[in-house]
Amino acid sequence: MSRFSGKYYYTIDPKGRVMVPSAFRDILREHYGTRLIITVAPVDRCLHLYPVEEWERLLEKVSTLPRSNRSMKLFLRTVVGSAMEADVDKQGRVLVPSSLRTDGDLKGELVIVGVLDKIEIWDKQLWEKATDLTDVDAEGYEDDLSGFGI
Image (cartoon, rainbow, N blue to C red; front, top):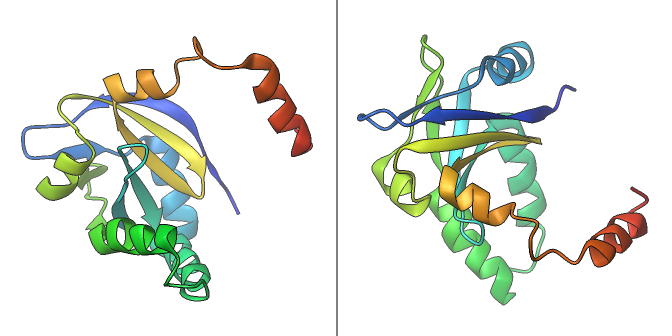
């Protein structure tokens, strides 16, 4: 199965539509179709776009986990509770509902990133803060990745 990867810069139009990069549209068309699930990533303050098939896999996994766990409750309330269907239109855009534009703090300039099984949509300023390496403990970062065999 093809995976999403790459970083692209776009803007959100006045109607709240976001262009899905053509490389991602090709993967969607070939493997998934044009229906997506769009939801919030509350900790990162970005949005996630899942092909329906990948979203269903995530829901299957989540449904087996303890719902009494505090983190799971937060996940269910924010991520699952905010999820909405969206379709890629003929021009390659997806309409982001206004509530999710607010949750993701999407204003104008965006960064769209492929992250394996999903696509992330970031406000450009939030992306720059989230990926700023200035305060990263380089040795700790490398140790963590090494522990994963990377």
